[in-house]
Length: 201
Image (tube, rainbow, N blue to C red; front, side, top):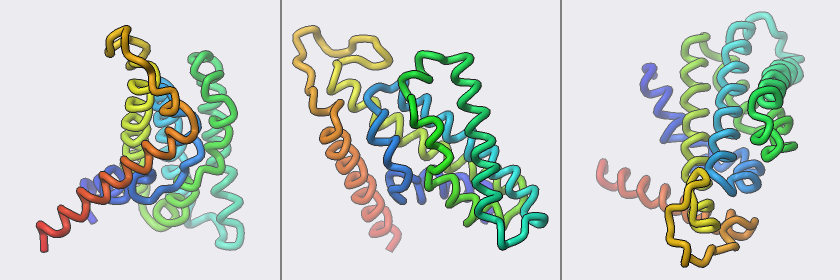
């Protein structure tokens, strides 16, 4: 697999949220605004890429018997760094994301990529895989949080884009709305994927 295919695999073909449907807890909980979605997407991408690089570099030195605990410690170290950086420089966003920043440690996407890819491939390929998966996660977060903010508040990034007379769809910024909108996005991706496969056939 060439470098572009590795990136495209995470960004489109195996998008963590829209295709694999993993790491959904934070996706549903904090995507009430685009700022939150971007913040969480960037944080996950940073932890995913950093942990992929270190795990790939150390893969020949980590015994099989302790590889999962070792992966978790490496992921936890990067999560702590992101947590402290956000606390220092983006305090409002840090408060908005709350407990979901430390919970990046147990995000299925990160541990899955460590086990399935970084522990078996070189540093460069693992870096590209981390960036591709992270970009795919960020894309899904941006799509979902944009739709929820527009429907729920009539704004995007805090700027009003719908008329003052617009009656906000409050359900879209509540848990049921998150499930429904994410389901519609996944359905759209599945539909486009089936059409693409049919075209190739």
